[in-house]
Amino acid sequence: MEYTVQEGITINEEKPYRLRLTGVDEGEEYIRFVFEFVDEEIDQMVSGVCKAKLAPGNRLHKWLSVFSGGNLEVGDSVNPEAYVGNTVEAVIKKRLKDGIEYLNVVDIVS
Image (cartoon, rainbow, N blue to C red; front, side):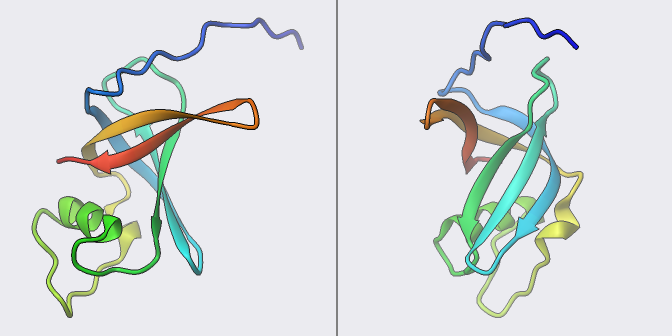
């Protein structure tokens, strides 16, 4: 098989993108949310990571509150995998690690 070098993906880091949650990878310390672009012609998955502790004010709390459509209260239980297929608006940043470019979800805004 032959491959052709192509242009890199252009991301506007100031603009929220509509993303669909396609999977959740849960570990002991972190949860990775995996998304696909909805309205853009970008054929690349993008992900965001949260610490696996749900507490008021932290990233996981904010993200799951957006998915659930309201503010989660102390004592509420939620399963992140229940939101697979849901669409959100998120801010994406490019990150460079070991010479490889990654697209990371840094915030879910609605």
